[in-house]
Length: 137
Ligand code: NI
Image (cartoon, rainbow, N blue to C red; front, side):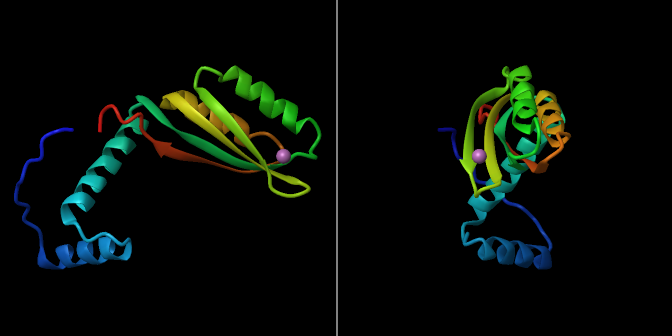
C-alpha cells in the first residue's frame, strides 16, 4: 500500500458544498476517499484516451434469432482473441441474449472490437465498461 500524504486544498465555499452534496448522495462521507476516487476516474479516462493497456468489459444485448448473427459475433470475437479474457452469455428471454465480454489490452483494439460488434445487424445495444488494469492507479 502506498504512503498517505496530507495536504490542503483551497476551493470556493459553494463548490465545496456541492462536492459534499454530490458525495453524500452516493453515500460517501469521506472527502479524502471521494477526492481520490475522482482523481483515479480521470486517470482511467486518460489511459483509455491515450491508447494504453486497459481492462473492462463490453456488454451487449442482441436477438439471437437474426440470421447469421451468432456466427458473425463469434467470428469477430475470434479475430480479437488477443484482448478477450472471457465471455459470459446470459439467455435473457426467448429472443434476447446478454453477453459480457471481459477485456484486457490496448484501448484502440477494444474500441475496434466494440465498433465491430455494434455494426452487426440484430445487435440492439453495445456499451463499454471502461476500467483499468490497476497498475497505474
Ligand atoms: Ni442466449
